[in-house]
Length: 106
Ligand SMILES: [Zn+2]
Image (cartoon, rainbow, N blue to C red):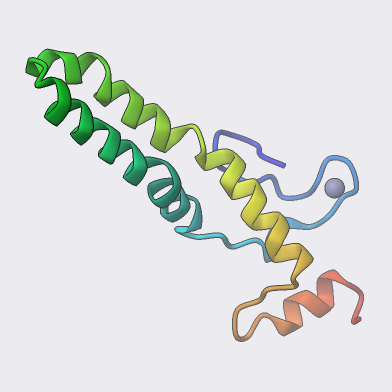
């Protein structure tokens, strides 16, 4: 469903579903922050308080962990949000006409 790292394709390559309805916006970043980054911050703070390592330990461990932890979940989270949006027929105000057009007026 993606044509690049986070860019949605125009249509599903399997069933032809039109992805114009999909608008997860900041959702992936929000969930990535809440689910991955915040807990990771607590781990990093705990490491600092418990072991008091020199600063370069964080550069080698915490920093790459945080970057990977924030970026890697973005794509699956975005896919999940688009799927939920489709399943629950979530729509913004004013997109009823687009939905009707995409789903043959149902
Ligand atoms: Zn499909």
